[in-house]
Length: 407
Image (cartoon, rainbow, N blue to C red):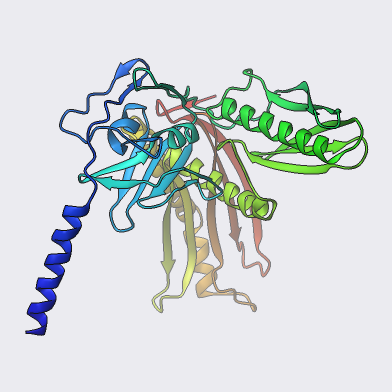
């Protein structure tokens, strides 16, 4: 009976919640992406809550060209565009930019009529889009960012703009300069980063003007390393010395205590990305010759790369055949000497008298893979107690887009 009463109570509460849930009518808001109107027929229309526009997550952000994901177990929306990744949980106002920064929305993401609705402006601008609101027509116009293949330029072409801020109450003026990344180094978050740096510089100057009793000037210095842009502001009077760090790819601030963590993560990601983007693995071919008691006297390990993609089928076959041939040649050349050495060893016996290895390393520049093979031989000849050791290195280039060896 207690279980039945509990079920009845739960049902009553659920029904009551349905009756009390707000019913959102169509607010007549239209959304355009690059001038093309989104059709919300059969979907939840955009709604205005506390002065902010919420839109169906997938319908709008896929139209912008973003990749969207929904994680049901934690009720989280994720959108990525041009190397920028942002996410927001249902019921939360916090938009996370990667793992390094956050911005706050005025309204939380929420489920409305079974649809995932997210605050439009904040998520769009985080991804680098421009958002305009026409109040008269209730129209939102979105211009997605230009997405470049190279998200983080190797060098930032920075110029400096001059401005001034004034405190009208005591007539204090502060002149200042701030960095501007020119379009000679284009990447998705460039405009967003420029706006953020300009705003930060203006805020620093205003704060100094309010706190000072005389005119002052702020100088600006910049440095960029491993995707982190550091901007240092110093006042002539010494009343201000501040350092602000930005993650270039996200166009966002990063706290100083997270800098080292980011650099380590970025390095690991760069190494993983090289293998991920070009999709290659290092394979091994090995062959051992052993005596009747299973004691090895020839040991061979040869590494070779294998690239993914149908265009690389022929070159991959050649890599494997060359690796096996190199091992077979070594066995054929030294097998007789190895058996003699093992059956009639010198006074000092080594565990594996004949060893052959080839270690393979791959690096990339664009679609060109540079394959470096380092061959090493360790062998005992004519009953010598000391081994003879030789090594050589061979390097060649492969166009992984065509599967051809290039000079």
